[in-house]
Image (cartoon, rainbow, N blue to C red):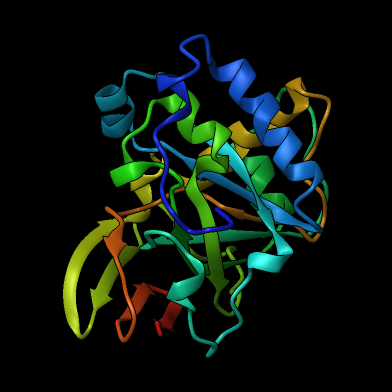
Length: 239
């Protein structure tokens, strides 16, 4: 990543790489990645799971140094092959821990939900990788931006509409249900998965609950806007 050149996937050299090993690599990255801002989910769409041959989502971490402030530009020269996707972001008001966390528990623990744009950036050539490869690459985490939070109390997150625009043109649409049927269910899965590793979701952390559309490639001078019904919009300019 330091020279911003993509590499061959790890499994091409290490055929024995499996998911437990990939998460070990990810934990090593997290230990040296600076302050933890939160977490991100991937492969939350059942169609995508079937496509890549897995039964569960995957997760990665979000480092505070990779946050892009509202109105600030995305510096594409700092990345390899950036792509943007819209997500529903949960801001946790209290801890979620244990093996039996449900979507209802997630909503009760959430202080706010917001529009987010995740900027993916894979280390691997042409985004070609196995599930273990992408986990070892921290699920292609690059940059992220979070909009203004809204209360989730009166919003059905399954049904809200999602629109992704690039340079003024609509490139993708979806609904909140695209993430595991309900984005809170995706966060609940993450809490249970972390509990199995002796970890928890902490108050103040954010969770990107999974891409709701296909990710769109971006470069210098592009402008991406993610709009989600009841939650507002976030614009990300690139340079």
